Image (tube, rainbow, N blue to C red; front, side):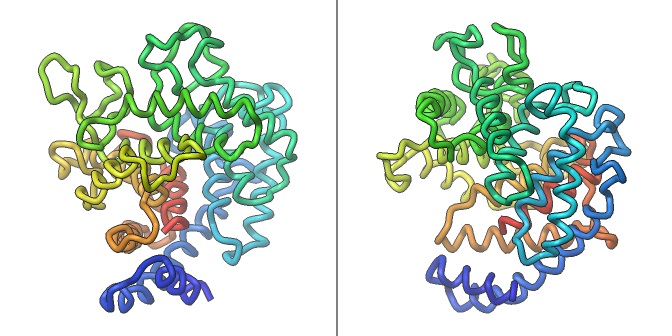
Length: 375
């Protein structure tokens, strides 16, 4: 059933060439088998307490952030895949996180310690949009409100003169006012994904500020830098000038930035008429590699950002690719084949590079599953 549905979806999404139609069936079959193996591995890693705990990084061992990531990944998997097993795992994961919710009102460790609260809280709110796993609507609304409150603007003592005005950082509303760890397209993308479906009136100005912030990250060629602060070292691809005023774009940041543009799109402006969105899509179309993240020098270097960001790139690219375009359909097929090739025999994924902690198989596997689910 999965293969048939996938092929029907492909055929309905665009006028496919005979070659693409012929390729659809084996790719759909490959995706299904790869996803099933990865899902079985991730479910087997859930601890008796209901959490997912890193065996690679001590800072992630207590499990709040990784459990939120695992819930986020599982919520993306279509219901036909092991529904009862996924629902059971989600329920146990939620129970593990509840003590932290009670202490903080947003994602925290069972003892109340903070553990990537912007990412984790946003992921849980998004997961609840995708799948009912027992998170009460009032708690989800509380999460959304907390994420909204983490945006950098006057309430956090930032003015429009700051390049960070309108974005999100790692600590969100828990950050000391007037300070930031650096707003990034990654944090902002996850925050916007969580809040943009909200019908609350106060979300509209939040999205407007975010859209202006997002445009400050887009470079003239359509690609995105990671931070709106031109001199920030978080702009990992470097700069085009010695003064470090013009950061280079790269594809994982561009996938995030494109999604930020879509999530903050004014309701009265058709996406098809948005030139910023069109130019970001063109950048991705013109950078087709999936064996590394395009935009970095020396992509063959195992320790480079081009390799270290791969799994993060796969999940964001799968979400950013436009619908109904042959090049995007071909890119999704390439992603499926790449993820199948990289999967270990027992079903997990692991990056050789520790640049972004993707050498932790829990992190790499959760990101890979999101990518496959969205392909």
